[in-house]
Length: 517
Image (cartoon, rainbow, N blue to C red; front, top):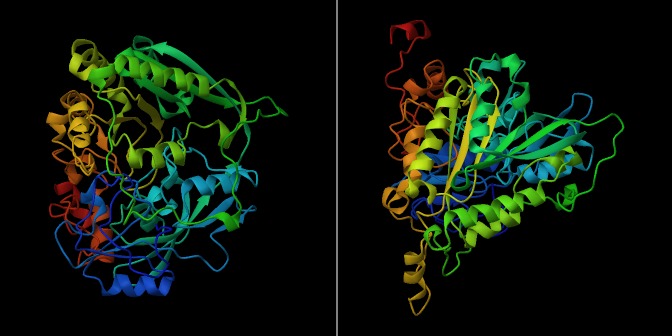
């Protein structure tokens, strides 16, 4: 939602960009940061094309931008401080109500300071809460993503109306809003269920890729009640090393004292401020990273694996401190000026997970180009069934695999090109062709989107270009229901953007005709 650059209520200098600056919206569009609900309502009502923005943590302009070629497009980055404060706890109901602009990281640290946390904490915690909910940001949890924690939310609709949507009075509409990707309106405030920040036991083990496949055997044919071993488990799979780190969490003995850690210090309510605006963001004059082919992917991967082993020690920790999460400095700050990448994620049905991962493992072993395409680990997590119409797991649990493409931006040849410029003005934030830049990576993407895996795309990440997405095919049970909500709430399509994703033309107008498709 907003930034330290420019005062609240003012227009921001464009173009709107993601947090690494490599996925900009057109410079011709307007970027506004309203400071009141009334101002936001006026902006949305009067706009022809509009899209809500957050902290810029996304990897595709198609879904993030109000338009890709329209100078009338408007992006709104609300910084609306509620009268009762940006965060309000209801300890009796075990809920927390938070302004949409607050980042997930700040919310987690605020809650931890008061003895609470959220279940299923995601790795990536720098999005605004509104953006995290709208894209089903998740950790590893049988109880679902952050979107599944939503008990109610406030949103401004296309006609400027402010609505309160809660599970008691409007459960079907809330299920549409849970994962709405900015298509239904601008989420301004969210009520989430919280849990005690209890002491948990963390254990980390290093296993071979073959042993990892053995762990996946237990998922085939398992009922949802038999998935307990994978609840909260996080796996870091290092393709070049054919190794993985498996991080498990369990209950601590009653009365156990937690160990201390050096990070995740709680913030006070008064210290909360908006994250840097994804507009007019600082851009370094040159950005780059040494190519995997120079140092070798295996050597780089080993460095990352050893660092994680040192960090993820076994022990008893408070839940907030025990989880594998990124830090702002390491992932937002560092990657804004160095080591640019695109992040992809795919949700694989459990029935296909073992075969899918075995095919990837075979590809890694047989193809040097694939091994050299990675050094950061794939992050593998189980996500349970949840009610959001466009949730990755609305129809049942899935195994999600997150992978990162660094080489499409960062190669030695491109770095040499940059530093040879006498003014050091050549930017490495322009991606080369994704297939020419990192073809080995795209081979893995092709497997994840193939019938062997049937991986669903993540709404906030890369991989949409050329993916052949069809909402009706990938969400056959819920796509048309979501489309009917979109038609009712946004009949002119002002939140639709130019991505081509929001195609409901094949949906029957009447629910009773659904089976005729």
